[in-house]
Image (cartoon, rainbow, N blue to C red):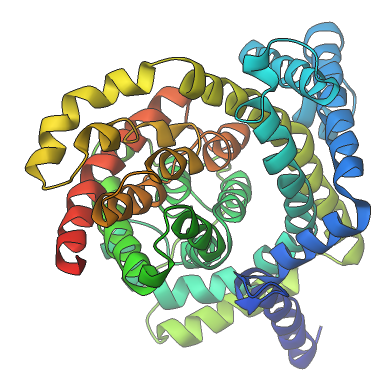
Length: 443
């Protein structure tokens, strides 16, 4: 392949990928989004909500049945089927639970605690259609970002920034931007794919997924609208940025993230980001990118890779989000667990100068189950500052089981539920004081 053809093979897919995953745009309703999320919404409009729900139900039930067959009865000959449906007993049970919940919710049978519009009904009707369409387009288009040299180029340019600041490789800049500009689930999927392909260590993949998978600007607007503070958008988003970056700097340097092994899923990758003598970051990045573009497979392999990624997301992640998200919201809505956990923090919140500290304390940890619950619970509180603090905290806490947390658990990233909750608590401890200080300055 001549140099011009290789350059075009690097530039064209990479630029299309950057546009689809990172380019901010405004939709018909005036919301800030990215093209991939816009396409996902367009697909849902075309096929309709009811059709999407039927497709989701079929996928989750089929996943559970094939998982039972291939994990407990017979091993599949196909490596792709084995990778998808041969799992440990814990995940077999989780997928079965997801199938049971999805059938109960779709047909409205069983206890109200499972199928209500604040538990399984919310996960199934509100979240799952979005994930179905986002996963489809993300899976089909991810290879544009990953396979044609963009990450090699970005990695060389940003290695000297990302390593000292966040203990991460330079190539993670793309994942992090995709999360901040677009959507946290997309960042998790990018990171999981990079981990599977041998470019991130266990620690790096976990740090990226649990530190940078922030909700999109659109969700931030929804939270602000819920708490009635749209006029504070600039100050609110600045507060999230300051608190989020502080957490991103601190979290990788303390347990449990600092104690995760720096070992690779695959050992056959050369992931050394050292710039050799005679090159600068730009020229070395260009050389690396051109090499990757030349090695990149043709269109047939692209389609195969893309479809495998979609299959992973649909059959492995969707059932887990349904199961874990439903269980989490049941605990939040039908038990006093989060009220009990928050009660000891009332004096601390009063010391920080927050009005109606009792109401605020009940929202501190409920965000682990769903990002919107703290905003819903705090919207009736009279104090603008208290609503501002809880709204911002619900976003910087980042790990919530009904979406990002569920997607992390369903991915190949090696972090369990217990570790996720510890990370959630640490993020709360780091970001809450920063948000309160910012709120006192603003109000």
